[in-house]
Image (cartoon, rainbow, N blue to C red; front, side, top):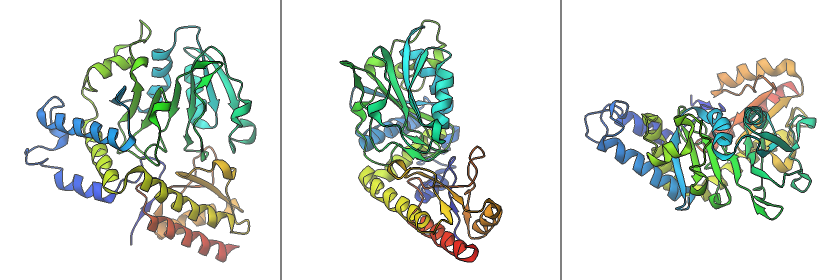
Length: 364
């Protein structure tokens, strides 16, 4: 029986990539070493990280005036690194509050800057996106921050917010942890993009940051060395030992993306998968319910509830028996959640939908 992993992260990786990792695990390209054993300053790993960056630049179309940083600390580290690198004490920053990860970023930024929440959807349990026309933006904001896809609540931005405001260009900052590489992206519209690796990039332990060069070199004087973007940009992500194995696997994922049609193909693939799940929910005669408004439903994370929560345990037990694992919703919201990132095959989603339809017939 095939197992399909719907975990929100660490998440499913392309099987093709895992098989290559398996093949190369004890001897990378005839070096006699595993990637886990290599010096991060040796020629072998230099080749790995150089190729990974080049392939990522090709996949995303990253302009030359952006630095690619392979960092540690998870997306949580970026919650502090951003204000520490882009503001001075007393500066104002604008944040859009659309879910749990927005709230966490806001809480951390408040330690270092005056946070203006330009809009919030918390009044309806983060089930929609506030209309951009009504955002209460600051004329003096150091940057505008948003989360493109809320992994827990399943809300995804179908548009890129305007960076300019009041006649000024405001750096646009985005946490893309759970939908980066899922569709084409105009990187040039952003000041900083960051993403935890463990959803669409590779294994946990690495964070990707794409930073426009003019935003580097302005950290506060008392910022720790490891929290300064310039430290890592100047050292080519090799100031200290980076997450070498995670970078290696991420590099293989970037090659897999190129081999499989790039981000245009991923966008079609992801739209088809998401449509199958939402169609099953919407045509279940109320047996399943998606809490998120249609216009901003995530293509990556699909939360849904059963009409009777007393059936949750039985649903999950049956799903596990059918090889459909990690479907339990986040503890803060309950219900179910199917995370269907790039590496989730269409067959996995078809199997999930078949199980959902059968379960509803038996218990409806």
